[in-house]
Image (tube, rainbow, N blue to C red; front, side):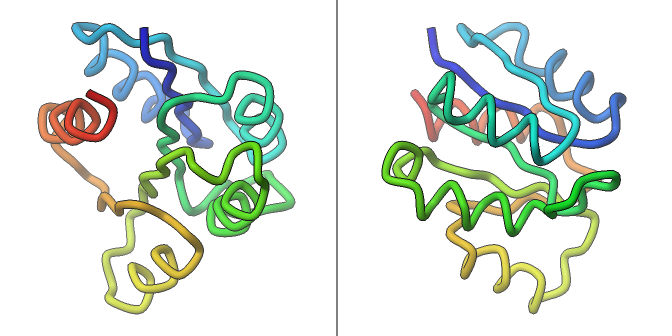
Length: 122
């Protein structure tokens, strides 16, 4: 069973992603802020992290979380897909520079997201 960490400050987005992944053989972990994300990533060592860029109510944003995880030897190999409402080229470039492996713009197709996840984690 593959572990996936879903990080988004909006409960409805976390739920949408969780529902779209129900048919896969995944163990899901949900985090609503940067602090929970860092704690779960280091404890569970997921096979993939879906990480919202804008984490309202957190001291860190998604790009900072991504950089931290990619600079930590214990978590640096975990693929990270950033989720964001902003698809501007400079935002995508900033995400990739932070170490993200992929970038998905909201709103997204749950089916397309599930396919991308299946491709990345097998």
